[in-house]
Structure formats: C-alpha cells, structure tokens
Amino acid sequence: MKNLLSEKYYFSICLKIFLICCLFISSILVFAQKQYLRTLQGNVVDSITHKPLAYTTIQIFSLKDSVFYSGAIS
Image (cartoon, rainbow, N blue to C red):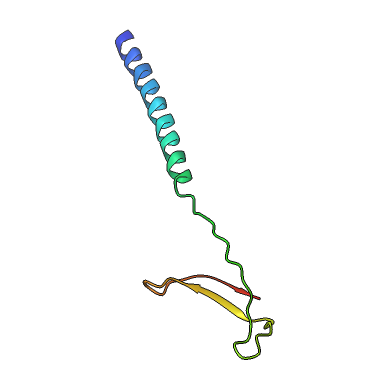
C-alpha cells in the first residue's frame, strides 16, 4: 500500500512539473508573436494644384499578394 501511495505522489509531482513547463513554454510562444509596428507619415496633396486634400481615404496593401493591411482617413 505504501508503494502505491508513493507512486501517486510521484505522478502528481511529475504532472505539476509538466503543467508548469507547458505554461512557461506557451507564454514564451505568445510573446514571440509580437508584431512590429511601423509608422507611415506624409501629406496627401492634389497632383495638379499641390494643395492639401481633406478627408481622403488612405489604404495600405501588400505588393506581393494585394492583401489589405490598414487604412485611415486624412
């Protein structure tokens, strides 16, 4: 009976260590997915008069596969 209790105790300790390791590794993987933020600045002007345009729509696409990344209104 004593041997059975020691096996259960050993199993519970191993299970706790395994779960702690899984939690630690998953938190590292979550933080590894950090996206790099980039800032895009500029002025939107008319091509003929070179005056600033108000309330124009700005969209950012990928050149490779035309995926829409972001958009804004000036």
